[in-house]
Length: 161
Image (cartoon, rainbow, N blue to C red; front, side, top):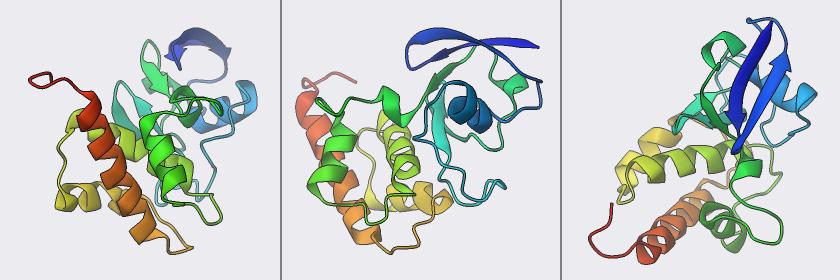
């Protein structure tokens, strides 16, 4: 089956069965290794990407549900030379230890701050419940999210939403 969707701003077409998880297509067909295979059961968040602006566990999203939609991975947020605001904040706060969970954390953060640029601490913590970090860098991750939120707010002209 052919599935067409937008991936990091580019129209793509993939050949795979409609049951194939998006994660497998991203890593295997598209060569994008940011989203990680963690549990394969939608319980760890390491595979989080954004689909139409919402955080989605790509290991649980069959291609059938992706057709015609807009998918953004961590690779679509910035580059090594010019990382996006959330990526910059995670770097500045040294939020990664082993780094395995970080792409999923960054993508969920991007989704949170896109939906609510003024997200408060309790909303951020609640949204991150879907993403696990075994290294225990939670406090640095939260600092990074606050930094990204503040930087994104500062970059937004007053009155703009």
